[in-house]
Amino acid sequence: MENKVLNENIAHVAKYNKELADEILRFNCEKSTLELVKLENGEFNIFSCNDFIHDINGAENEAKRVINSIKNKEEKNTVRLIYGLGLGYLVDEAANELKGKIVIYEPDLNIVKTVLSLAKIDGLFKDNVFLCCDKDTLSDYIYSLTDENTDISVTFLNYHKKFFLDDIKDVLYTAQKAQAQHHGNKETLYKKMPHAILNTFANFEKVLKTPNVLTLKDVYKGKTALCVSAGPSLTENIEIIKKNQDKFVIFALNPTIKLLDKHNIQPDFILYIETINNQAQFDYDIVKNSYLILEPYCYRGVYNLNSKAIFNYISENTFLNPWVLDCLKIQSNLQTVGTVSYMALISAFIMGFDEIILIGQDLAYKDGNCYAKGSHYENLKCVFNKELNKYVIEPDNYEEFEKAAMVSVSNNKNTKLNAKKYLEFLNNNIATIKAQDGSLLPTQTGYAIFVDIFKKTAKELKRLKPSLRLINSSFGGAQIDNFENIKLDELIEHLKPIEKKNLNIALPDLDKNHIKNRVIQMKDNLIKLKDYFVQFQETAKGLCDELNKKLEFSENILNLLRKQNDIFKKVQFLPKEKYFDVVIQSVENRIAFYYDENYLKTPDNCLNANTHALLYIGGMIKIIDASIKKLADCELVVLQ
Image (tube, rainbow, N blue to C red; front, side, top):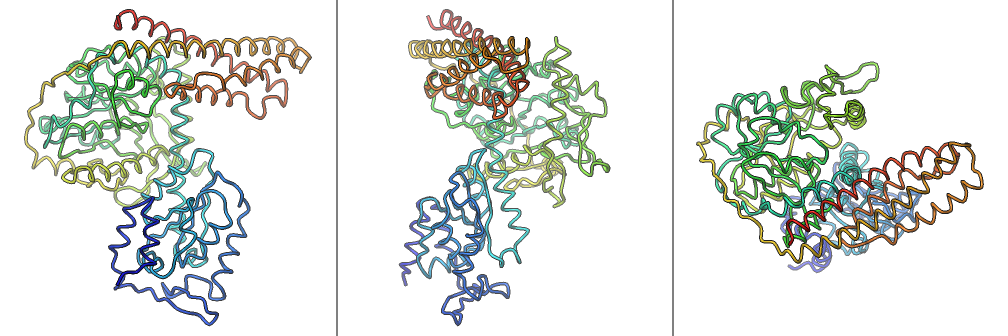
């Protein structure tokens, strides 16, 4: 018999999650052990786990008490996680009393279908309320509903605290990891933006003449790919790879080049996304016999390396890539998530492989090793410091670590500074993660996020191609769900040699007039941005000069601060074209970093902020000048 109440509830859920709606409808409740009980006070309750889910003295009053205990009811930039659907009392009360977004997590489909079959739950029909039943969907919701400043709270009944406290903590951790992607994305985007701007324009002429990785669709259909990362398991399997390298197409990440070259392993593809100068990692013979897959914003020297050929991987959402795609008139749904290993996985999928194997993708510090023996950062170790009662990362040879951290072969001062900063970054971001054997391993916060990303990506790739086998042979590392855990030596038995292809290089068709118009517009935008920086530079320098004479807020200082404030406001009049907006956001973020709420509390704070801002502004002016010149050269040489 048709259940109109269930259908009404499900129809609303289907508006934002049709997959869940279908799953609820298919679910068979006939074997349910839930017991719906009508109490003496006339309210219904659910009996489960030998206890009632709601307070037997009054479920509605219980819900009011829980919601009344929340202090920031009017805060809009917040996500309220409600653990457990129950009979919907807590959901209704939250939807009526709280601002922000509300996400209900109920993993038991028995409860979901039973409750949705009984009565319309008004709270579920609010536009700011979302129901989910698995942590992957929860993670997706949190990422889409939050930014780096969103507050996340979790609310639950005493019943759930009694029986599911560990899972409640895991749900909150899942949500916090999903939100952390925003912070990581923003930090990566804004910190690397200056390098990315110059690299994009320096590489632009090459990018225009370089084929896209999308042109390689299905070139290796039915074959096996090996994606080689620099985790400790790579060293453990290096001899197996060497002896069987003809049985898979090898996708190598740039930190692995040194180790692969040492063992005479020839990668078919080398992938790179870094904006800073890591070109020293490519100084090995195997590079010239490899195809390179590069992002347009990667360090500019890499596009000039001697290799078999280069393919563009242009992620649609990163730095100035939307502008590049528009210039090339390319529609792309390629993404980047801040790790080149993701780029390798997606590139292999594009090329049609039936099996994709991960090796060195440990995403955890196994046996104290941060990276594979023989790879670029091989001497970094993660050890437990008993005095500090926590894991710390330290190099066993600091001089060798400094060499590995080098970003400029000509500036030893920067080398030492960057080595120190990188080590501080690693130690400030240590987390723990579940290993393949169920134990906990130390890792980086970013790696923990990547585990979730790979898990969700694998699920989506297998949805798109059900025959696809995704295998993780990085034994002893992090557990990545939706990948099979199989040792590499066990896989070798069924693999046959692959004929490596000399790929046809299909050069892109260029609409030179269209590109020229886009270049002219970009130059105009850069000129306006430079003018803004020059004005800012003038006031910042004036403030530094005055404050260095006398460290106090004099009348001259106050006049300069008023002038600086007027310049602050001019940022809103800078170009807001779709492809330039991310640059402006980066500028605003950086200025906000220097001129924070403490900026004018003391003259010393004011001097310190302007001193640091001058370095940033001076660097940006040089980058803008160089970028304008690169675009002008391209306009003269390529676009005539």
